Amino acid sequence: MSAIVRPLAAPTAFRPAIASLPLYLLSALALRLLMLGKPAFQSDEQFYLLVGQRMAQGALPFVDIWDRKPYGLFLIYRGFHALPIDPVLGYQLAGLVFSVLTAILIERMARAIAPPNAARTAGLAYLLYQPVFNVALGQSPVFYNLPMAMAALLVLKAFARAEDPALFRRGLAAMALIGLALQIKYSAVFEGMWFGLMLLARARADRWPLPRLTASGLAWCLAAMTPTLIVWAGYAIAGHGDAFVQANFLSIFGRTVDQADAFTQLAKECLALIPFALAIGLAPRRVTPVTGEHPGMLRGLRIWALVAVLGFLAFGTWYDHYLGPVLVPLCVLAAPALGRRARGERWYGRLLLGFGLLGAVVVPALQVRERGTASDFAVASAAVARELHGRCLYVYEGDSALYRTTNACIPTRFAYPSHLNAMNEAAALGVDPAWEVRRILASRPGVIVMAESSRPNLPNLATKSLMKSALARSYQRYEGVTIGTRKFGLYRLKP
Image (cartoon, rainbow, N blue to C red; front, top):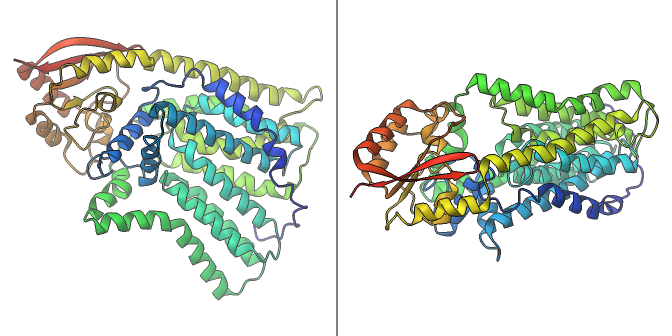
């Protein structure tokens, strides 16, 4: 990494990439039409939107409503409730815009190692594969991939410039962007650390004196840490420092993994990534080499992709949307295999794009079938709302969006149902889930929602037993609702 790379050619700025904006916008919209407006399309996204709603009403994340995602993500979702449109559509359109901007940056980076048409196709591949991995609307990578891609472009260009007098400023800007990404999801730390090491390697190759190198490294680290330190300080000043630390930094170590389910998901994801493996790993050995504006960036791009993959593997849960940040460097690296015209070489790109298009159609269709439509959800919301009678709603199993659409009070900090109903979260909450469920039941919620169809997580048998006993003793099932293919029983207090 210490070798000095030849200087970049004169910058072409963003003009060619911006020319792709209409293509990316139309493609992104077409790929998302089936998903738009569905309030329960993804369980995480509906919960983030709920947190945003309750923040608008004065709730404080980690204190009044618990999760381990950073404050910055919830602040973004708080903003969607300030828009003059349905917040569901608001966050989904915002995600579309972030995705298109990220695709533009992918094209810009891909031009360093591939011809313009191939680079443009790399940006399109990103938009195609987002729905394949359920990361097309409002999952956290949709939002933090943009600052990470901006940081990557700054770092890769800085690394390629020997004796650049603006290296410190470029590094500071890049690490500040990484700091913003960290406040959307902390898993960006892996890529952030790698970019920091690249900056230090460039400075060392430029023979910076040790005091200057040390001071610059500390300044870059501080730039990346500042957004999180500001939020942490705010919570500490408000007397909630312990709650912030438990949710943000400690809870992840208490979460367990259903190994059988995790490895099944990983196997499916590996199969879905085969077109990228062929385009990135096999094609360069079999096809005529192509170059872009600065092929010297290729090494840095490869290591970035490796670090992103290792970051994905590190947590061991391997949900499909965790591949969101991996898609950015993979799409850039796949660019040389895209846009091929010679016989015997075209199939790499055609396979990647064809599989992506197929997945982008099939996966959302299956998701909508399972998760239901807006009208399905409106029927369920109405059925819940009419029996609340001023009491709280408790969704033990089901969609946390019901709290938002009914505007019901929530009888617990743990509004995301899996936090109390799934075994993998039992040791991560900072409280005993059984104790919390007893407390909830003692408050006598007006309506309780229970699943009556299969659920993916290993259940928390202790809390499940408490729920069954309470429902038999104090509640009556008054209606069943179907949202997509999922069935739920609604229970109200006995007279």
